[in-house]
Image (cartoon, rainbow, N blue to C red):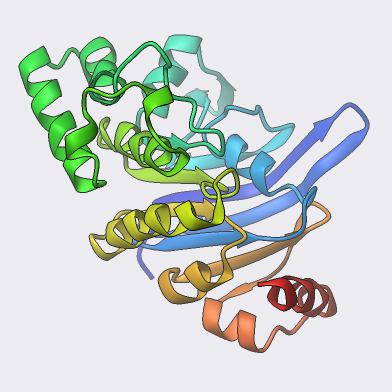
Length: 257
């Protein structure tokens, strides 16, 4: 077995007395697409936010290429990183949110080129050239000068994907990237994600799109109640779920699909 790019060990997260994640173990290998599915409130988005320390885990750890995320070793003990150290580490994980989170006062080109210039010191000409390539890649080459309010929801999400890719991350996290879109716009975003998968982009995707999970992912995780109930090959899990909770969830989801 190859060493995983991302490894999660005994991850727990509580908000007050409410435990949202109850001991998560998972691995993500380079070039693979991992889809996480499950009912609302099962902890999927919280898990994703813990992966890059947007949410600080209550216990357990996340490792990227063997290095703990948000923590650093001092001797044989782990301590919290400084904000600047964490910000630098987060560059290795792109994040695409449900609600786009584009800067409204910046054009599509500026949204994509800004971080490489400010965070990584990339010269403007190079940053804008690479941003144009990414916008063309997601089908927005002719929308570079448009502001977010001039773009459809699907176009805004594709711009957000280009922005996540601009920092050349090791993997990209997607938090229900199509759930805020009208049905006719979902396909254009999933098409871009399918292309990224074919190119070998490592992705962890929280989604309700079962056909995408079945056709594109190498690994499927079903979560409920803050735990991983079942995982495996997406086609096998979706066609022949072993656990009753998985069967009940899929029967509801696939009925309404």
